[in-house]
Amino acid sequence: MSAILSISGLRKSFDAVVVADDTTFDVRNGEALGILGPNGAGKTSLFNLITGALKPDAGRIAFAGEDITGFSAAARCKHGIARSFQIPQPFGGMTVFENALVGATQGAGMHGAEAEEHALDVLQQTGLMPKANLRAGALSLLERKRLELARALAARPRLLLLDEIAGGLTDAECVELIDTIKRIHASGTTIIWIEHVLHALLAVVERVIVIDFGKQIAEGDPNTIMELPEVKEIYLGIDADA
Image 1 (cartoon, rainbow, N blue to C red):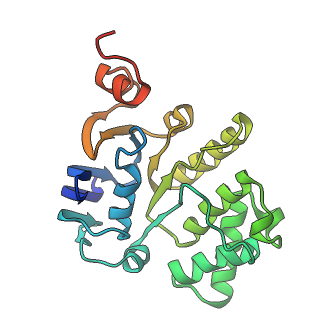
Image 2 (tube, helix red, strand yellow):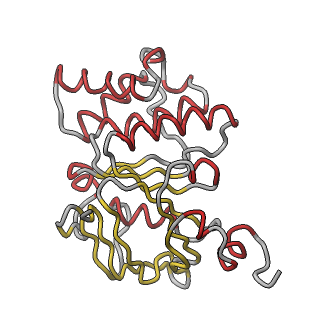
Image 3 (cartoon, helix red, strand yellow):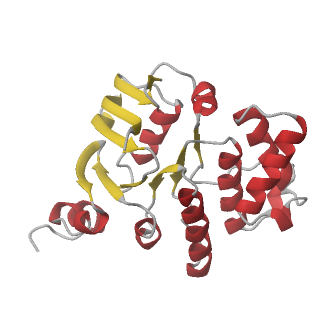
């Protein structure tokens, strides 16, 4: 299967703090990839580099075979890369529908009835249709997480980046969210998911990459990777010599 995203030799630092240290990997079209690592490992910075919010010091990012390293964040979105944020950031004074409509018009470049229909489709897909006319600021945490997902989907992404979208949810809410993400993935959307809620992540992804201080530590099958001593040490706090 061909790669939809190719990252090679990516480097980024803020003075002495290195957030990407020769990061190199491919994401296959239609794959669900998990990114693991402790707090401060560089996971969200990696998303910021992929989406164009940060410029790399070195390296190359290719999407669907095209070098997008110099593209703006807006151009990358229009090319098919969308993301959710760790802390939901809805337009609180706008309705749920209007939030999704922003994604359809500004992300996917749709207009008029087409944009409205697509916004309604993603609200249906994410279970938010009953809340369509509510102000986004009045939503529960799960509903705000779903709205983050809906706004990203409204941009019609080929690559969807999820940043700790299960964080702070109850077990029951997490199960609901997992089911939604599974359906999105089954529809053919490629996913990269950063997550500390391991059971949620491992229920969806087919491969994981573990990073620490911006450096790739391990990559492969999720169950195999989670048993590696070095992964247990940096991520789970278990001494590798234990």
